[in-house]
Image 1 (cartoon, rainbow, N blue to C red):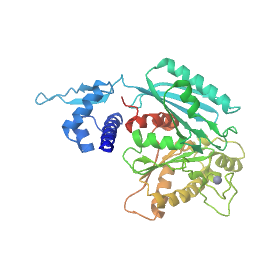
Image 2: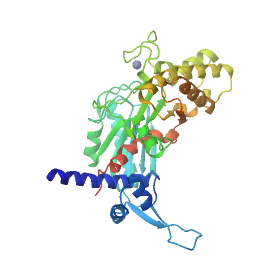
Image 3: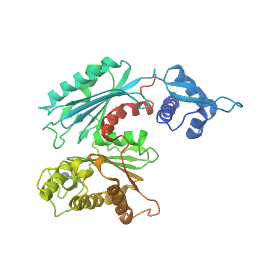
Length: 384
Ligand SMILES: [Zn+2]
C-alpha cells in the first residue's frame, strides 16, 4: 500500500507539472483544452488548476468577446507572481545569463565577452553575473546551465570541450548550488537548445527533433518521443564527430573524417579564404551572391547531408533545426539540404522531413540554459 501512495503522489506532481507546461508553452489556454489533452476529467483538471491558481503559478483572465450570449470564456495564463528561472550559458569567449518566467518571457538578460584564462576565472565572472541578475529578480527557484560538450550531466561537470580555452574537468553545478542554495541543472549547450526548441520553438509540434549547432565545432541535440535523449553515461550525442569520410582528415577526437572538420565555421572560413584570397567571416559569406560562394555552400550541404542522412536512417527525425552560425544561411540552402535528405533517406519517403532554422536564433543557447531548470518544474519537481 505504501508503494501505491508514492505512485499517487508522483502522479499528482506529474499532472500539475504537465498542466503548467501546456499553459506555459501555449498549447492549452482553458480547462476544457487541458482535460482533452491530458485525458483527465474536467473535475480533476479544475482541482489541479484551482490549486495552481491559489499558489500563484497561474491566473485566470476573462476574455472579452463581442458575443453577448453564453458564458464569458476564461483564459488561463502564467501568473506574473509565479517563480522565475535563471539560465547561464558558458560560451567560447562569452557568458550569457537570462532570467525568464515559466512562459519564457525574458525578465533580465546580460552578456559578458572575455577570453577565459582558466576555469576558475570563468566561474568567478559567472558568479558576478548571477549576483547582478539576482538583484533584479528575487523569486528565482532554480538555475539552469548550458555549456559546450562533452559534459557529464549527472556530475554537473564540463569534461574537455574542443576550442574552449583549455578548460577541462571543471565542476560547475556543485559550486553554484553551494553559493545560491537552490537547485542547479546542467546540460550540453545544443542539447539544452533542443529542449527549448521542442518546448517553445520550431520543434513544438514534433516528437523527434534534431537540432544542429554549427560553429567552430558542430554540436547536436536530440529529442526522442518528446524527451531529450540522455545516455546513462551522462554524455550528449556528438554528431560533429560522425565520420563522413574514413579516408579523411584525422580529428582531435581520434576518429577520422569527422563532420566538423569539413563543415565547422572555421573549416569553411579556410575554404573561403582559399577561394577569395582574403578573410571573410562566416556571417558575411552567408550573405554573398557569388558562384564561388554557392559552390562552397553546395560542398557544405553535401557533407552535412551525408551525416544527417546516416542519423536520419537511425532516428527518423520529423524536423531538423539549424542553429548557431547556420542561422545566417539563406533559405534556398535550407531547401537544398531538405531536398537531398528527402531524396536519399531510407524510410518513410511519403512524409517529408523538414529542415528549418531554430526559432530563438542568437538567444537559443541561453534560453536553452533556462529550460534546463524550467523543464524540472514541468516534470513536477520543485512544485510546492
Ligand atoms: Zn572527431
